[in-house]
Amino acid sequence: MKAMQSRKPVGRRYLFNLIMAACVVLFSLMSIFGFIAIQNKNQFIGTQYNGVTWSAASLEIEYLQFLHEIEEFLHERSDKESMLLQFDILWSRVPIMIDGTEVDVLQDLPGYAEKLSAIEQVLASVDPVIQN
Image (cartoon, rainbow, N blue to C red):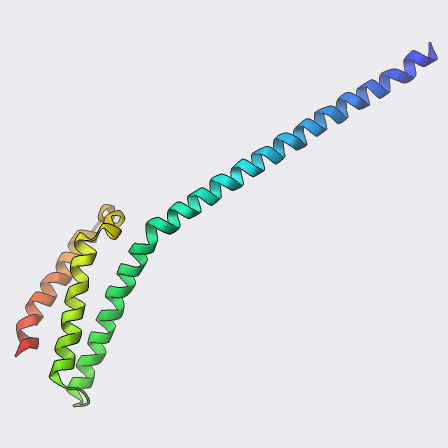
């Protein structure tokens, strides 16, 4: 009889250890699959927004360089040709932000098209002044 009583706790302990091992394995598998899912999403986001980041940064850089070139021209440290070149480069970035395949993601943002249209209108109105 004592032999049977000593076996029951070992059976319960074995069952407990088995359940704990199953929980550890299940948790490990869930962690691995979660990590893989996060990596896939990060990779997707990285490829999706790389072009967007470059296009927006490029437009901003050209805008700032154009402002700098105007200042240089006004202080007679630069010639008109340099300013016109910088203006043309700035103009060339706007169609990329409007029609570029990289920025399709941005088209869904509220006000995106209106802001780019406003930028385009400002550049169009400034164009005759810059050219003369």
